[in-house]
Length: 405
Image (cartoon, rainbow, N blue to C red; front, side, top):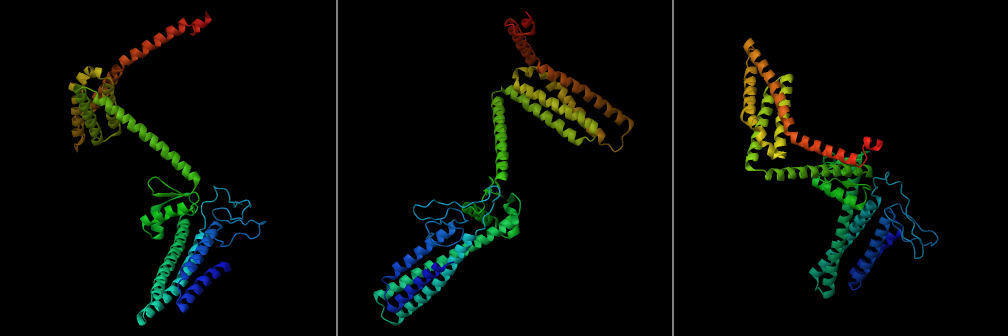
């Protein structure tokens, strides 16, 4: 700090002492206000000049430049000189030096003048107690109390600023060379409450100490580089897009389902129950080979009922599947599960299990054929469209034969 701060302090101290000694407080308020205003202006300039508290450059030919956040102050007519920073991708943190210096100044100034005004207040109170208090004495006492509160506030503000810088540097130390850090880790490593960590980080981002700082959507992670932030945003955009597409598809399916007749809805619900029973049987029956057959069957049956939902007119084509094939399939799977659970695998049990496995293969072939038949109408429509397209291309002379002609 330069001699200006001593001048500000001396002015206020002398003003208070003179007022106390003379008992004349008529000019005290204005004098102290002027001194505090000039001090506040000096602090503001110091913040903009990277923590160097100074007046504007008295030499018009030499415009000073700071290394803090902002351009230096110049006299009218001078060009603003912007500080030169390294590339944005290389600068992740400020040191918080200006904040710390400002905090120290406020704490020292507030503490020193707070003691003086407290002493003056005590003296004034004693005077009020032992003498007949006049209006000037009472006014002086109130003024002393008022300025004591101001300086106490300055002291508290300064301590808070210094403490914030200290916490910021501890967070930076925890993050190290990483591009992001979970706030929970900061809370654990610094032994602070997570909510207070979040409040600190938001304040530090607002102050620009984390030059490239961002919080994720859930405010759980601090991202300290633009590269990592761009990657995060790109990832989140993809996730949101996929989620939106999924929700749109689900809504579309819901609308399609709501438009179905009660009969078709009942068929689909029954089909879902069959698929569930097949899946549960697969979980209960060990063995890779039999499991693969049951998994294939589950997929086929699920696709069959999906097709019926897409084309409700085909519900009549799966009557036998619903009334006989699927109930029989479930019985076979349950029987296989019971046989496989026997502690002694005798010849009859092994033979029965093999017979059921062969039957499952037969059923899978049948289900594949049924699924293919359900797409027959679509195949006809596609074949018709292709035939019409070829005919039109030939008429326009755009097919290979037409070009030869």
